[in-house]
Image (tube, rainbow, N blue to C red; front, side):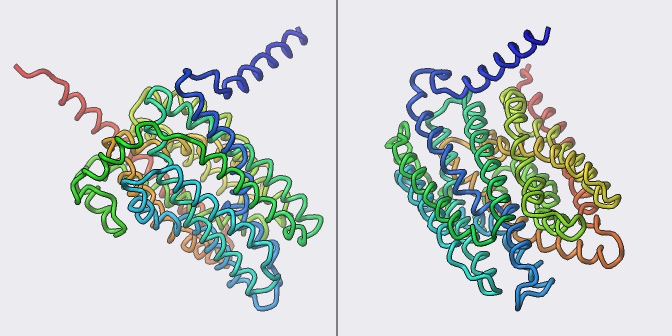
Length: 455
């Protein structure tokens, strides 16, 4: 019986890893997928150097008691580094404009190199207040470059992979990415617990791997590139992506359903983004966790859970509209916020681990819906415009949310309620979940009206 169990387990594992091989896809998709798979096996090593949760932990642990850094100033730096993704997202309109009518892959590869150089530069920051803010600035600049990769990459996916395979392929690439980031995060934590000086060696290694990944990615071919460029250049001026962040208003006013979807995402996402810096502060202040344990709870465990969750979410997203997907998926974040709140208030470490697992399940679905959800609304020649709108709105809530989260946390601590920020995020997550549920019912009624035959 035991031998049969292990044989079945081995078979499942072989099947799982075998599904990542290019031969598991139709022949015409294998070359591009193979290049992307190889690139995304290397690039996440570099991304560990700009990952908001990990860098928040590193800042908090490294620069505590540093001359010139008060507790409040350090909390501000931690909050700022977790807004780096948001600040980068606010520049997505610039990258969408630059990429419009131009070859996409060379631009993406160049931006990857830009982020990699920022990671390398982190090795040279001094261990003082100036160094802390220099590290924050480099993380922010790295995400400005990386937001362009995220914005333009979806156009490559849309043209290279058909609808039936896109979510599956995106899920596999995301799985490889998070597994590599989890491994790097765990190893990074151990090295820093041994010696903070190890970052002088680690950051250049991380950055150099990003350069290697960019070189590999530059070999990806964009199918129908010339046709796509002509279509983008032929679009009406008002329909081209523009550098003006207010251009998102035009997208939302033209597509009311997408606007409602973005409104629900604003509510749900704001609650999630509030607590990225708060988790680093809670682990250090309330649980006295070291580098390794802090990175384990904030980065490694959610990252390890994501690959297990992605295949299930991918199957669901392949069958339903993203509005229906979010009406189910959002409740996972509600559950995670509730568990974190209880864990912090009762000082239960075990429950923090459970909450991290639940959060990873939510991230697994979020990886897919965030990258592909806009394509349920956007025409092909406006893909980058819709994605840019989504990215910029994510940037707006991510720019404000972490600072509000830290302010609520510090206010709560002074009144014996360290879980205050999670209580607020729980309320926001509930609002987003109910919003998606109502939008899903409305969308279903609209779909039935559209297909009803006239007499």
